[in-house]
Amino acid sequence: MIKNEYTAVIKKDGDWWIGWIAEVPGVNCQEKTLEELKETLEVTLKEALEFNRQDAFSAAGNDYKKEKIAV
Image (tube, rainbow, N blue to C red):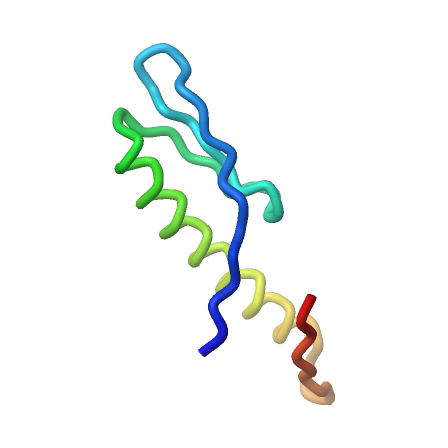
C-alpha cells in the first residue's frame, strides 16, 4: 500500500497545542499535549480523506473510471 505524506503545521498557543494539515483544508485540531495533537491530526486526516473519497464516488454516479495519480 502506498503511504502518502502530509505536512502538519504545529504550534504552541498558551496551554494548548494547535495544528493543521497544510494540504487538506479543514483538518485542524487542538490538544493539551504534542503527542495527543499528532495522534488526533492523524485520525482526523484519515477520516477526512475517507469522507472526501466516498463523496467523490457518490458524486460521480454509476458511470465513472478510477485512475491513480502520483505526484
